[in-house]
Image 1 (cartoon, rainbow, N blue to C red):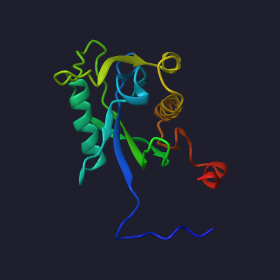
Image 2: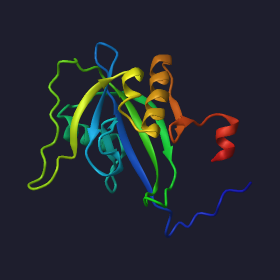
Image 3: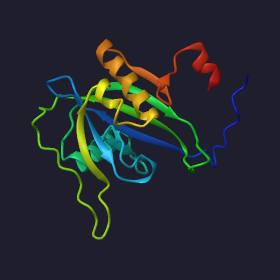
Length: 176
């Protein structure tokens, strides 16, 4: 199968994101609770979309500082997660880069961003999580991503995912 032609003048929209995998000394990972859109009430990894001309690593650092008050120390790329275009949202296709960061003590103060005047806060809380706790606090695609990254972290490898599922298998490549 030939790849589709690329329009270099008007390429397809693609979101690039940088997310953080921040463990503590107990082997738990920091998540934040979204308070917006379809993610409201669910936990996800801190981080976010890159701005125009911003690299994914810089986006991760910027968003983590804003969302948690932490100054993350990236160690290595822990994984990638391709998110397909979703016309029902609408949401552009995207590629998230998830960075393993240095450990942070569980007692560290996490400072969530303040709400804009007259608005609800973007984030409503945070948790230090394991797969057991994440099962009760995350949407299914966020949970798949979390579990795939958890395995990669414990196996000291890099996860390559498509919508939170392993992407380096024949079945996954054919479905893309």
